[in-house]
Length: 174
Image 1: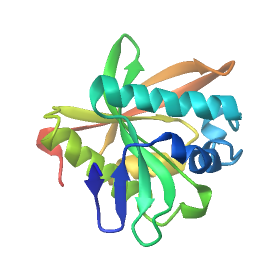
Image 2: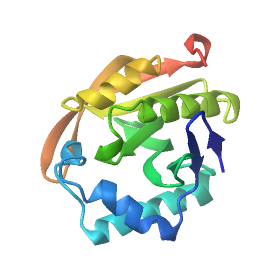
Image 3: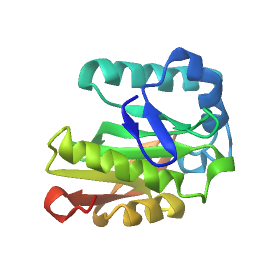
């Protein structure tokens, strides 16, 4: 276990999480900000990328497990993400649609912010969010972040405007 909140555990994902990850990444509605659901191959690539991040950085997107049931309901964690000509430490989150609007993403994201500042000694952390992803933008705002920049990313053949939400350590409340 990496982190614990009131209702959640966050831990490294493993190959045995593939089916739970499929429930998130293969859901068309959940993946609207990515221009559609992933294939089995893309889900495996995603999982492999997280495993590689753990080896390289000792962090990545972690499995979010509901304490009450032991079920993996989403993923949330820290990644290094390209933003224009630099890399930024980002809090990312994706949850099964069944668990939307219950505060889990905010709870997990706040724990990741605290981890970034206290364990990684980061000076700031961001969330990079597509302009049409209003739910994720609300999570970033509840996590004390504000928009500092915009950039259009090209992904899956589509130009996607994104906002960079940022919070600095000295401004953060935990």
